[in-house]
Image (cartoon, rainbow, N blue to C red; front, side):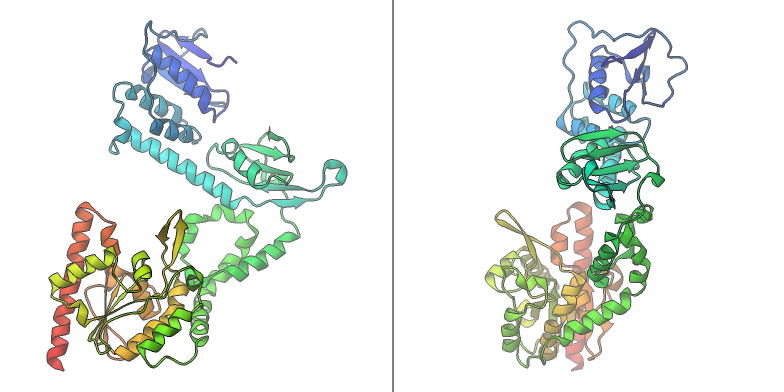
Amino acid sequence: MTMLQVARAGSFHVVHLPVADDFDFWRDCARALIQAQVPPDRISWIEPGGSGDLFAQGDHGVPTPTSGAPPVRANRRFVNLARNAALHSDPERFALLYRLLWRLQANPGMMEDKADDDVRKIEELDKNVRRDSHKMHAFVRFRLVEADEAEGGDRYVAWFEPDHHILRANAGFFMRRFANMRWSILTPRGSLHWDGETMTEGPAAERSDAPQGDPMEDLWRTYYASIFNPARLKIGAMLKEMPKKYWKNMPEAALIPELVAGAQSREAKMVEKGALEFDERPETLAAIDKAISACRECPIGLLDNHAVMGEGPQDAALMIVGEQPGDQEDIKGRPFVGPAGQLLDDHLQMAGIDRSAAYVTNAVKHFKYVQRGKRRIHQSPAAKEIDTCRWWMESERAIVQPKLVLAMGASAARGMLGKTVSISKARGAPIQLEDGSELWVTAHPSYLLRLDGAARDEQVRLFDNDLRAVRQRLEEIAQRA
């Protein structure tokens, strides 16, 4: 087949693609068709195994571009999306790509129109293909196949069922990651084989062609069970990221139902163990400050950071709890002095709450981050890290004995209650604590900083309502005392 093989019937063209994922072939065909001024509704794109238009019969030939035809225009955003979307299994994908390319010639900026149906469709195809590739990277499991030295030693074989035509596009990933192994990846759409030097393609395979297990899998299952963290278990998120269709290929999947069933009791034991690892509670705020500086009970304390103690009157009626120190708090050694703290100060003042009269602290005492060049990027603390640090916040509360605690954000609420709660469901009403004080829950100021437009206006309104309700409740408590 020539690079551009087109059957013509009058002004109707049928393009036969040699393979289902050949973007470069489609691009060359599309460029010639655009320059020949062939509109999208006069082309049928046929991939291997597909059927053509019943009325598109005629002689083979290459469309001749109109004399003086301008070069075909396509911006980088279109090319990047199209290259990925061409791997999708949607039989109409190449027609969509050509239609977009045709429209781009008259409207070069259309790819920025998020409301355009064609733009939204290509973005959806791109997203689905990227997700399928991510699943392939995450869930391919190689199994050892014994082989004698005459055949080059051991070979590893994996079975995977992609939703789209992603096999060839991901060959380089596995070649780089498993460069020193001899391996094969078998799928219903084709196969890849790497001998340590050369990558070759093979025909489609069946599940029975792949091995069912190997001796190393018992060791892997033992390791997986040991690192399973019940405190971080979110079943909905787990199933979204690891759909059950992949479980049959993963040796650790057989353990998941039992591990999930026992997660709640294991989490309780972890929290209890975390609390029992400390000595008796410090009796002064100064003693807590000294102790948290030396605390290394969770991975956050091992980072290059500084413990940040709470501050405020020791007999404050109001205790304000945030998530953790940020970059500026870590540098200055004080809570809520960065952008979120400045926003909090403004809204406290508008609500009539004197920050200097409140005790302000965080659920987690060290700054959790990842280093990106010279910047330290905030990372949310894990449930186990919050539960471990709860010992220190509870020690502060035992000394200050506030009448009312304002927890800002889900991490702060978990630090107070020992469980995760929904901010939208918990806000607006007091939660009675065992010592007789009240807990009020609201959003974290940093959440407001990440929003804009109408969404931000609404969340700011709710935040201000929460602060005004807290001020009113503090006044009622003061009058009752």
